[in-house]
Image (tube, rainbow, N blue to C red; front, side):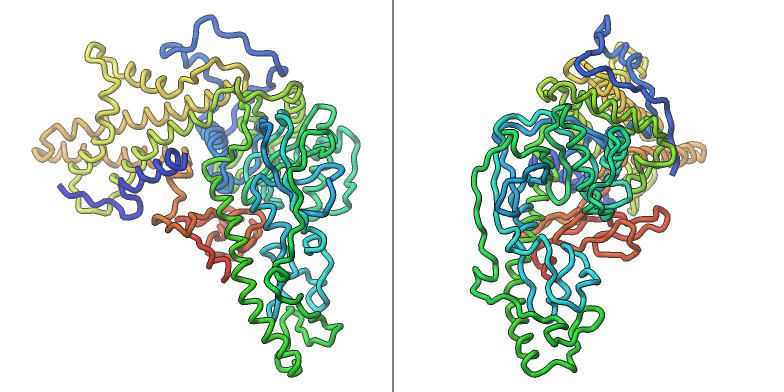
Length: 620
C-alpha cells in the first residue's frame, strides 16, 4: 500500500533531521507552589532510604505541572544552543558552570588590556566582525554610519563620518586570550540574553542588576539608558556584586556565545597573541572614503541620500569611482559576516567551551505564572513579586559559595536529547498520519499509526502480567532514570519535569494505541457501529497528539529548513541581537524574510520553516 503523507514533514526527513541534529552534528497560565528555596550550597539532600525505582519513583516527583515541566525541559534543551536560545528567547534561568583551563577567547579593541570587566568572544569570527570594520564608499556610504544592521543615527544623516568606537583606528587590535585555570564560578543566562531588548530576553540580567542596585545602594553610573548602556550597567553591577563571591563572569548568546570577564588582571587569563590588523581597504589598496559631508559641500537629503540633481561633475565622478570600490569591498565584508553566521551555526548543537553544573540551576519557572508562548513568556511579569526576586538573588549567592563542578552533575542535556530523539519522530509521524492529506481509508490510517506504537508498547508488555499500567510504569521509568543520585532541589526539579514529560508522552502513546489497535484487528466494515467507533477513535487520537505536541513545544519538530541546505549555506535561525543580517527590534511591526509581527503576541516571532542562507543574502 502506497502512503503519501504531507509533503511538509515526510518520515524519512524527520528521522534524518533528528540524526543530523543530535548525532551527526553530535494561552493559558499555570501556577504551582514553588519548591524553593534551594539548600545551602554544599549541603546535599539526604538520600532516600530506598533508591528511586520503577515502583516508587512517583513519590519523589516535585509539585510541578505539565506546562511548567515543559518550560524546564525546553530550558535545559536550549541551554548553550544558538538556534534554540533564539527560539526560546526569554531569559528565565540562571545556570552555574565553568570555562575550562586552556580555553581560547577573543577580543578586538584598543591596544590595552581592560582594567575591569569586558566582553570576550568564544569564536574568533565573532570578535573579528565586531571590531574589524569595513569602510563604506559611494552613494550608499551615508547610510552605513549606524549600528550593525541598523539605521544611521539621526544626528549623522547630514554630517561627516561620526567618531565611534567601531572606527578601525580604535579597534584594530585583535587579542587572543587563554584561560590559565578553570573559571569555575560562571553564570550562564539562558535565552537570547545579548539581545539588547526590552521584551524579556534580558530579564535575568535586569532582575539581578536591579536587586543588586537596591542591596548595594547603587545608582546608574553609566548615565545611559540605551540597550548598550544598560548592558554595561548590568555588567558593572553583576561583577561588583560577584567579586566577594568569587564570580569570574557570565556567559550570554548573540550570534555565538560571549563571556563577560569581570577581572582581566587577576591572572585568570593570559595573552596568547596581539595582532594589529590592517584596515581592509588598506589591504586592498583602496584609499579611504572621501569626506562627503554637508560641511564639505555635498548635497545630502534628510534621509541621508545624495541629491543627484545637485551634484557637481566632480562629485559624480567621485561617487562613480567609489561605487566601484564599494562593489568590491562588499564582496569581502559580506564574507566576513557570513563567517560569523557560520561560527554561530556551529553552536546550534551546543557551545563546548562552557560546561554546566545543573545542580545549582536557579529559575523563575514554577515560581510564578507565565504565558505558554515561548515568545511571550517573561520572568519579569506583574506576578513576580519583589520578594520572589530577592529569593532568586539569594539562591544565586548561595550557589556561588563554592566552585561549580560539572563532573558531579547529571548531564541532563544528554538525557533530554535521548528522550527527544526517541519520541520526537514517532510523535510527529503519528500527527502527520492523523492529519494526512492523502487518500487513506480510516482503517488504513489506524494501521499506519499503530505501526509506530505497536512495537514500543509490546516491548513493555509482560505476557505474565495483564495489568497494562505495569508496562506504562516500566516504559516511563526507563527514560527517566538519572544514572546517578539526585543531590539538590534543582536536580529534583529537573528530574520531576522530565518525569512529567515522559509520562505525558507514554500515556498518549498508550491511549492512542488502545483506541486504534482493536479497530485494526476487528472487521471494521461489518456494521455502522464499528465504523463510527473507529471514526471517533481517530478523532480522539488526533486531538490527543495535537494537544501533547502543543504542550511539548519541541523546537526541532517545528523549526527546520524545508530542504537540505547546500554545502555553502546554513539553516539560519534569526538572532534577536546584532547580526550580519538585518537587525530588527522584537517589537517592530515590520515583517522580514525571517520574522513577522504577531499581533496576538505583540512582538516579532520566527517564521516557519527556517531558511537556508548563503553569503549572497548578506550582500543584498
